[in-house]
Length: 147
Ligand code: SF4
Ligand code: SF4
Image (cartoon, rainbow, N blue to C red; front, side, top):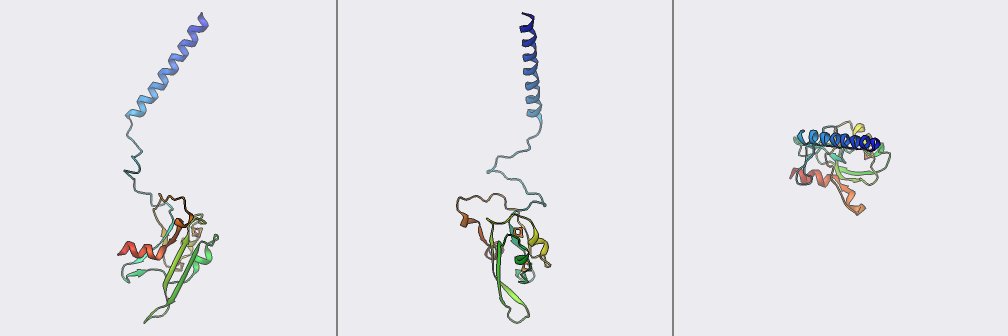
């Protein structure tokens, strides 16, 4: 009989502890949001897929087609081409493709760029069942975002 009373007391105390924790959490401010209806700003250190940086003064991407990022990528997921620039030395970016299915977000491409022409985007909610949807035309994207 005494053994049962001790066990019942323990169970009751355990129930009270659970209720105390529940009520404590109910009184704290919420740290989650109703995704996808609401989203939160991403941290500056967040690494989403890479993106080209636009030069507002020149109205074109900052990329100088030096190819360093393509060479630096250990996963071979960057491929870009350039054409000879008109009325100035150097080349103009013609295509910039990213195969995000192979990207490990290592950051070597961003670090290798001497012109701050690529950055990590804050895109975090890409979802698809098709691999092709993760093959990005970054030149088209940066132009679209500026138009
Ligand atoms: S390293 Fe920078 S400037 Fe050179 S090709 Fe890549 S993005 Fe363009
Ligand atoms: S983050 Fe790394 S793996 Fe991804 S494109 Fe850049 S260099 Fe390649």
